[in-house]
Amino acid sequence: MRRRNFLTATVGTTAAAVAPLIAPHSVGTSDVIRLRSGLDALMALDATRGGHDGLEYAALTSANEALEMQKQAASQRIRQRLFSVAADYTATAAWSAIDTRRSNRAQSLLDRALYLAGMAKDPIAELRVWNSYAMLAHQRDQHAEAVDSGYAAQATAIARRNPLYGSLAHARTAVAHSNLGDRQAALRSLGYAEEALGKAALDEPRPSWLAFYGPSELTAMTAIIRDRTGDPVEAEAASHRALAAIPAQFRRNRALATTRLALAQLHQRDIDQACATASTVFALMSGNPMPGRMRSLLGDYYRDLITLAPDASVAREWGDRYRSEWSRA
Image (cartoon, rainbow, N blue to C red; front, side, top):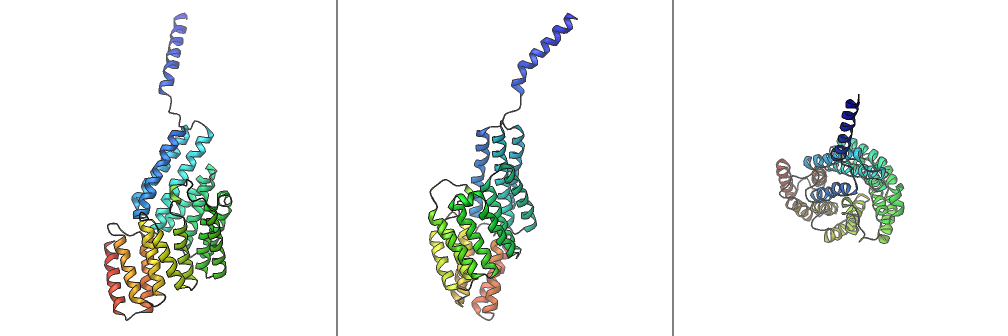
């Protein structure tokens, strides 16, 4: 009996001594920072190339890693931060699906991202998701829902507290109102966006997904709103101002703004100039397939072109170029 007790005690002591060496790693702040840092590279890739399958896959892989890590979090605070990271990566994947115009996929990912943002108690992630919901609703021609999503973004704690985020929420609502044809509401929301941005501290740190937003992007959104509310002259002027200010690394955004400029010129019946402007989009995106959202916008341009100038030779030439680029993409 004494021998058995001795062996049991010995094994217990040995196990106790070894246990700390084989215990699971306790996930802490440094792990969260490491995982979150990968978002910057994905957003830089998005700014240059736009949404694509590789971007979505990488984002979802990191989201899953964050969710696995939260099972070993050192504290509840770390768990919430990991849920926040997972929400951001999932929202990045959703954004990629929006940019490639896969609306059903985007919807399911946004639903998941909103759930994770709630688990994280992260109002910034919540605003990001509602901003994307508004864009998805526009793609689906659900413009009243886009307005509601804009209002939901405005209601987040970060939009009420921080004028930069508030400005984005109001700007997105303004675009949604313009798509509904409500000129007065669109210009009112645009005014709120401009007023809030004037109060924002633009040099303060911000998440990489929000790096695109500032005076240049608001001006680009102004061009959209003005064109859709029947003021193509002001839309053209706003597009020129936006292109003079959008940083070069935001290649996809510059291409979108250029297409908007071409639309504003087209809606003034300046057919030759509009086609020349629209042709530069292909050079801007040279080397990468065009994301579905940009292809769709160029399709809108082409439909308006053949409606306004069906017999113009420059319109036929541009159509040939468009079909050629589309087949390559």
